[in-house]
Every structure is written in structure tokens, then in C-alpha cells.
Figure: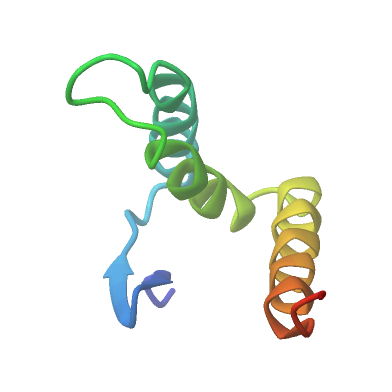
Length: 81
């Protein structure tokens, strides 16, 4: 089975082969990201955790895809006057 890779800022990061480990890493990033007001931890961990979880769960994948479509539409909208 080929290793899954996550595209992130123009680079590809390899994910662990174990499904349980991927789920655990994604959940940990989301939970710790909620504590982003603490030093070292940050809110940047939440989207990364969601990205990892989206490769495992269809519900999260749909949420991620809707977010990407919304963001692209927002970026391409002409500025209002």
C-alpha cells in the first residue's frame, strides 16, 4: 500500500501507515489546537488536525472541501465598494 502524503504549503508530508496513528495524531492536533492561547501550542494545529482527519473520515472530508470551495470563492470575489 503506498504511503499517503499531505500537500502542505507546496510540499508533501508523509503520513504514518497506521490508520490508528493517523487518527490519534489528527485528534491530538485538534484538541491541543483548541488550547492555542497557551505558549507553544497554537491555533495552527486545528486546521492541520482537520486535514489529517479528512483523509480518514468522509464527514470531515466534506467539511474540508466545503471550506476550500468557500475560501476560493471569497478570494475571487471582486472587492465591494
